[in-house]
Amino acid sequence: MCLPIRASGVDDDDGFFKVMAAERSFIAIKPDGVQRGLVGEILGRFERKGFKLVGLKQLTPTRELAEQHYGVHKERPFFAGLVDFITSGPVVAMVWEGDGVITSARKMIGATKPLEAEPGTIRGDLAINIGRNVIHGSDAPETAAFEIGLWFQPSELSDWTPSDQGWRVEG
Ligand code: DAT
Ligand code: MG
Picture 1 (tube, rainbow, N blue to C red):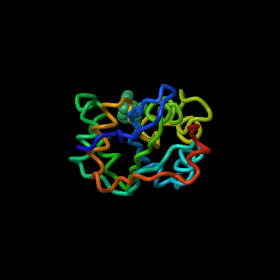
Picture 2: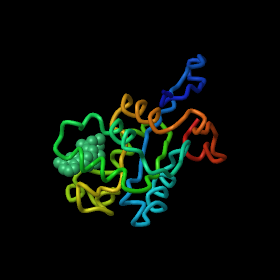
Picture 3: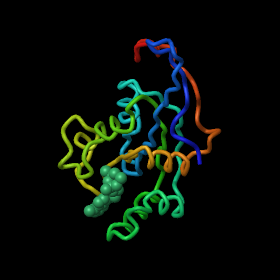
């Protein structure tokens, strides 16, 4: 299991060096998004927002991985179909980093039912059906930690500083 946060430090106004948590979220483009050629469109939205890509790979999930990932839904009637769908082809798995990325990514993704997702969101713009809603995003720090550890080895995640970081975040 790897943590979704990376410790970094800042000098605050009071002169003390404070340890800050760099927040991370697990985002995955589901098989429908890959099959429909939406990978670049979706990646571009997160890049343009200014979040930092720290992990990226394409894989077809095993049933075991899919069942663990969606374990919280295992009693739901749609679970079997959901696992069939998510294992049906390649998924683009990503880890994005930045303050507030978990909540912000959920806003960028939009409501679970694409017809209820606001225009401007990924699901609102690119999907119509709940069973083909294109993208997954972690919904809380605990699920982000679990999902990042499930899908990625620590060695697959990059600690790096974008050269334009000062133009994204003040300080
Ligand atoms: P989200 O993906 O927005 O976090 P969720 O965690 O409630 O939504 O459900 C996970 C996925 O399961 C969702 O993206 C699509 C599928 N799903 C959820 N509710 C469903 C339903 N009532 N019928 C069919 N699929 C459903
Ligand atoms: Mg969910």
